[in-house]
Image (cartoon, rainbow, N blue to C red; front, side, top):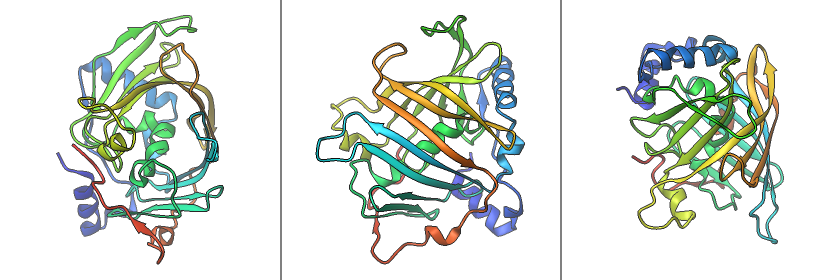
Length: 281
């Protein structure tokens, strides 16, 4: 399997960046899984249109129910991710903080939250783009089963999404998602997610022997169509499929047409560069 860094190097050498990177096909458990995932992609606007976007940018708002009294509970961030290289930059206006990823290193300025900056680089990018990220290199998609999610009239289609190796910056090969598709529309309507990124686990003080944080459950409560692509733009996080809500999230101002500003990932003089593994296996 060709890693993402190797794909980027090959693209640079041969000048392939005039068009989106072509990823190796994911591994499907069987033909039914392939057909269901392809139907989900079409229900969300198709893969080709998504790959053709020069960047994905959005405003991300989250209320942190676990914030201490001395901390600001609202997480507000403007995120921009290059679709070809997955370089990224973030502006946190309420914290006067920034994060950047130039394809090799992650840096931050004035970062005060507990989560390691590499963990934040693609964290919410995955949640906004999860239907299409099933097509990334190294993705393993299980056979489909059915699950009776409380509140839905029909059983949902359930497919596990795992990885051969660390999927992206701030992730690990222990990360996984469990996708829940509407049986009629084939839209992604909910999912579970777990993260095994070691620097995050250390921050979370996970008990010995537990190698992932989660899984937590997400119910998508709003979709928004942008240039023919259907994005999940609001969801709530729960410890179980029908339990108390521990997080509310809203995505605003999704833009898939503006070119990426590469100057924004250049490391500022006052930046702190993350000293640790960017990905873990």
